[in-house]
Length: 183
Image (cartoon, rainbow, N blue to C red; front, top):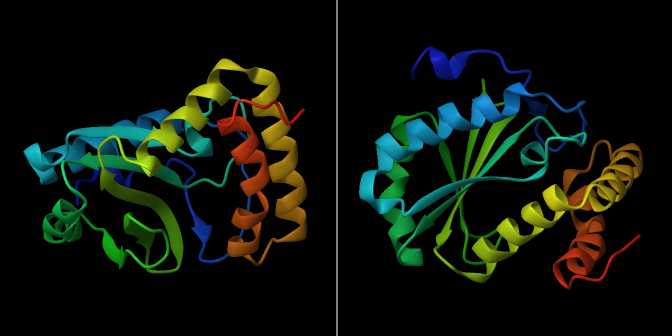
């Protein structure tokens, strides 16, 4: 692993825990370094690489985990990514957690997740939803603020249950994607 990618960007949350951090301008830099490493590892298999999740919204608190979406031609192409991703420090989590999504995690000593990569088919439902949600929050600060307030409340309720925290955001996300303002 490149020493540059090991630079401390204030990243990391214990597995299954929910901790929010104030927005950090260095998250974009951490994403850029990771995207470059992924691009080098995957080559032409990766059609596009995008920063998604709350760390991609500059103004809001987020779990300090860099979420990255990688688009491939066909979903099965994700299997060809396992070895190259392992070679740059990622562990393959599988496809059982989210349909049509090859998930890879990068941790510090297996205890603290710092990066999460989703490899999906280009222009698939997952790909399009992640980009649409991110772009709507970036374009509408009122939505971003409402999302941040929800996240703060849920982080208090579900500090030790990341699955419940994530599930509890679903209604808000669906309203944003449907273009119905939840505010």
